Length: 98
Image (cartoon, rainbow, N blue to C red; front, side, top):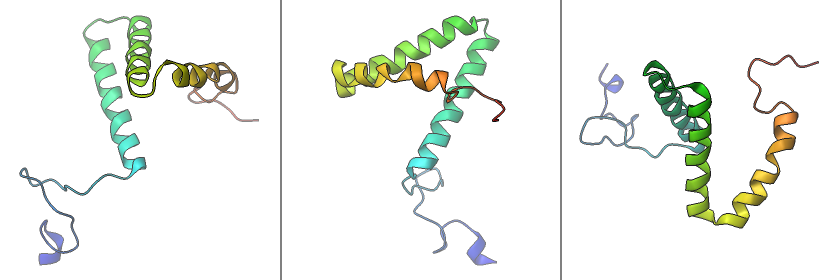
């Protein structure tokens, strides 16, 4: 049916490549961001980068970007809470909940 094709009223605006140009929701942005990071992570591992080096470099890149955007004190305050969040299992994948 015609309504099943891009450009129909049921679809958002398209960019020059024919992709949906509608703004992503925050949830969609998080999903896309995580997928891009995981893809880059896998690529780096495949090129022989050690996982520990990759992890510390990713943390450095994230914190550097946040400091540039928000300043040192707000980022330091956020980082102060990370230890408790790690201990509570927030970053543990495939954990069992009792």
